[in-house]
Each structure stands twice: as C-alpha cells, then as structure tokens.
Image (cartoon, rainbow, N blue to C red; front, side, top):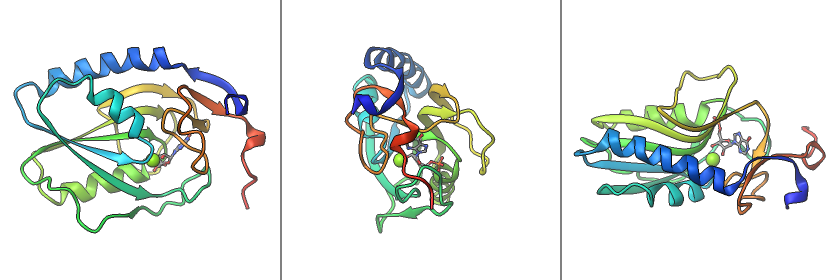
Length: 181
Ligand code: IMP
Ligand code: MG
C-alpha cells in the first residue's frame, strides 16, 4: 500500500503527538460540561479511537454514517444520511468529529441537520483541513493539520474503500487514481 503513495505527509508518531495537543484543547474547552461526540464514519474511525482515549472527560459517543463521494475523488454535492434516526442531540453540547474538511458539503449538511434538533452548542473537529475555497460556508473549531488541495489516504481515509488501514497519511499517487468519466 505504502508504494501507492507519492509521499508521506504525516507519520504515525507525528499524528499522535498532534492528537495530544488537540485533546488538551478539547479538555480545556469542555471541562465541567457534558460532551456528546458525534463521529462521522467511516473516515474518522481511527482518528476517533485515538483522540477519544486522550480525552479524560465523561462523554457520550454516537456515530453518523453519510455518503457524499461514491468512489471518486471529488464530491458529488449530495449528502445521504444512512441511518433512519439521528442521535439524540437536544440540550447537549455536540462536538462533530470528521476525518477531513474538503468542499465542506458533508460537514455543512451534518451541522445544519443537527442544529434543527436544538443542541446547546455544535462545534466541529477535523483531523485534516484542505486549504482551498469551499463550496459551503463551514469552519472547523479544532483542526489537526492543514494540507494543500491534494487527495490523501491513510489513517482512516480511503480511496474507493482502500488504504484506510495505512498507519500514516500520504498523498496518493496520481497513477493510482482512476480517470474521471
Ligand atoms: P467534503 O468535500 O468536505 O464534503 O468531504 C466529504 C468526504 O470526502 C470527507 O469526509 C472524506 O471522507 C472524503 N474526502 C475528501 N477529501 C478527501 C481526501 O483527500 N482523501 C480521502 N477522502 C477525502
Ligand atoms: Mg468521510
């Protein structure tokens, strides 16, 4: 798998060191409040597991599953919620966890949907944020790393469901990406 990378952006020790810092910021912010984390699957599963074990606060966890990509490297703009019932968010402090802020379509749709259920607050934490103009006005409150506008895989992020189990994050070689049709 590693040979399909053009280059490694963040190795595992670098990611985990950054998670220590992110966790410290989140603990400081939610100290004394009950936190509900809503993780966006599948991309955030490794990030969620490593980050939450660094947050020694009482918290609740729910997972949401959405589809917006359909196996290509650019968003289709449509966000489909895969579960019938949304997590119970009314009256709670919500922290949404996702792998990457790219076009913003997914996080804007999730944030707007959760806000209709009257939470006390909604904040967003992403492992990666692509520095680019976004289709949808959404900003992350906690960011692991800023990256350029390149397609990355590993540490939970996939290309056509592969590479999620790579321990590092890297830029996928262009010749591994199927031409757009
Ligand atoms: P959005 O474009 O911000 O809506 O991103 C939607 C989803 O696309 C993210 O949650 C990721 O699962 C996926 N995605 C966006 N950029 C990348 C990338 O560079 N590598 C792998 N997945 C990506
Ligand atoms: Mg995802």
